Amino acid sequence: MPSILALDQGTTGSTALVISQDGRVLGRGYREFTQYFPEPGWVEHDPQEILRVTLEAARDAIALAGERPVGIGITNQRETVVLWERRSLRPVCPAIVWQDRRTAARCAALRFDGLEAMIRERTGLELDPYFSATKLEYLLKKYPPAGLACGTVDSWLVACLTKGRVHATDYTNASRTMLYNLANRDWDPDLLGLFGIPRELLPEIVVSSGILGEADPEFFGAGLPIAGIAGDQQAALFGQGCCRPGAAKNTYGTGAFLLEHTGDVRAHSKHGLLATAACGPRGEPAYALEGSVFIAGAAVQWLRDGLGLIASAGETEALARGVPDTGGVTFVPAFVGLGSPHWETAARGTVLGITRGTTRAHLVRAALESMAWSSADLVRAMAADAGAPISTLRVDGGAAANDWLMQFQSDVLGIPVERPDMVETTALGAAGLAGMALGVWKGTDDFLAGRRFDRFEPRMTAAERGERQREWDRGVRATLAWAREVAL
Image 1 (spheres, rainbow, N blue to C red):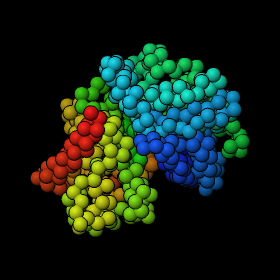
Image 2: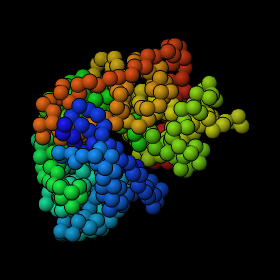
Image 3: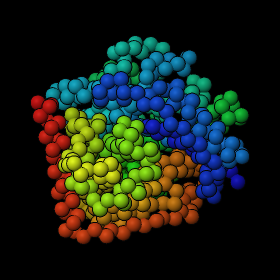
Image 4: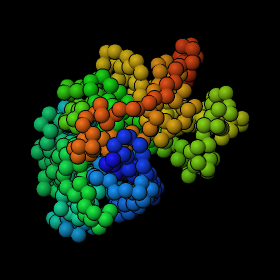
């Protein structure tokens, strides 16, 4: 029975899964890697470390599986940019991570020049440092482009795995750069000119499901075709089976990302959401509407690594259950600004309502609640854009394994939440895209056969939901007021 190696290169770690034709996970590997914060609001990664830990995780997964997969699917943190020497494959600088805010002033200047509407119309994106264009512009002012190549993390991994023979990205990752024209499905020459980015520096844009090259035999003992690529949220959307109009999912990872498939129709949001590329049932180009929360699981990581309040994320569920509420604490984890639907670059993390009676359990519960409330803001914005409510929310990502959080999410939304038996749907989506190209699966129905879901039904009364919603909204207003006074 053939299997696929799925490489899931995330913001804080790399996961590798070997997934068999019948959907079983035969082997799993995982490695965290270093986060660098050289200045307030700056976030960097070491591209060589990303490559190393990804290969280590892959080899662990293959060893546990006890068999060599027939191909590779790649999914990755989006918007993060890498700049490297084309011939030597040596990075010339650290990667600038999607969370990085160093180009906020440049975005403000472009907005002042009246370019925001044009950029939104062509790319579907907000004018924000989140996206890749201003990051690349910043790097190219420091490093002359002659002899260099650039791209998002998928491009970096493909270049390294093929020993520089292939420089490619797929349309879902390209759509997150603020350089890609959603209508033309190609790099936009006017935007390249605006940001001073030579087209020859950028990767070729390929389909998400299709053989684009071969990983060198040095890495896994034999040449393996790379046959699938998608940005992490689009891969998760596909892995959840949401590849037709109206289907939606929310992923709880470093951030939280809600996507609704819109088919062949590009949506135009009036409520702070993004239009983006997605995969159709055969991996073909399609569209989705997306809401982005920049900090979700990263807030729990901060409680662990920054404050030392917990030893592991697994402790949070018991701590949250151990108190009846947050004790009046509201935590808005805007460490790198607020994304959808507010888009406030100057916002920073805010904890309100602390008293002498506040304990670590209250802070932990407030951090978990913030994921649910932030996601609920996205669901409401998406329902307003669609003109119809979302009746059921499918969820995935690491934090989706937390039963308490999923029940609370259902409570604050007032709708059922469905969690698949395999929450690593990002990797699963990458495997599906690759496996369909290689004939492992005949189509999405074959790929998704046998999936099972846990279902969480809302228990909170409408009155309680409304009262708690008002407290969350009050916390967000306080965060925005502080940010906008600073911005003035």
